[in-house]
Amino acid sequence: MSSILGSRAPYAGGVTRPLALAVDLGGTKVEAALVDGSGIVLPGSRHRRPTGPTSASPALERAVREVVLAARAAVPADAELLGLGVGSAGPIGVAEGTVSPLNVPAWREYPLRRFIEDLLPGTPVTLRMDGVCIALAEHWVGAGRGAGNLLGMIVSTGVGGGLVLGGRAIPSPTGNGGHIGHIEVGGFEDPCPCGGRGCLEAVASGPRTVAWARGQGFTGTTGEDLAVAHASGDPVALAAVERAGTAIGRAAASASSLLDLDVVAIGGGFSRVSPALFEHARAALAERTTFAFVTRTTIVPSGLSDEGPLIGAGALVHQSDLLDRPAV
Image (cartoon, rainbow, N blue to C red; front, side, top):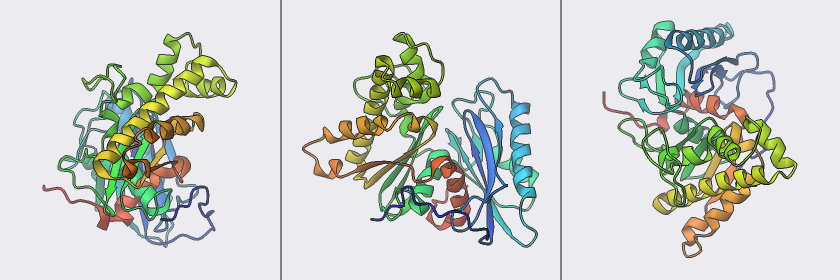
């Protein structure tokens, strides 16, 4: 199995045609950009607007409209727009084209696919969960390139995930397969908005890790603050990152016990809080000493930096043969 961690080819000034318009909707922001058939984000085409738990639906619609139309305007005159891929924080309704991001409460069963189709009439729109997109991106051009069984994970405002098994995205009737952020992790009892206790997202997401640290006396307010404190050796920050990493590793080990994974590739803003996050995750997975098929699983940072979700949304168009097709 090959990997291209840290070796993404720089943009060389040429555009592989046709193009995909990629949209990534999360709990903090919505982004759109053009992605070519080699998994390259076209410079100058990337646009971002805020979302968040306090945004009302009209503001969210305006944000999506602005980034989609701005990216569409960046399509070169001699390039074809093949389609539009949308990766959204879950849960989603893939057959209905709806989204209900847990951290964006103004949208519950919101018809995002139809909204975007109305913005760009005649352009095919494919919607999947953002975790599926990150898994496809890592399998296509990232840290999991060549892996048959891969879990892609986003650790950010929330924790999302997606699966490529046997070289294909897993079939998923509702589109929410691989939602690893809401499996319960042993040894933790943190309440989760989904109704569970000890869910990975409730333990290891950026905001929840910072909240836990603040409960232990930490005075910072953001993941960036926690990263600085961790780098300086602050004991609460060290404990917070160890706690999050351990939870991630336990979740990865459980997933590998079930699915016999080759690679767990992890991206998202909070995944970059410290390399120690990965060290703790690997240590937790390595505790499964009896199961060599689990301990062979590698946990690696995303090979795509912060472009991974957009590249994955582009893969919904360029790598569409790897997708399951829901009944409609």
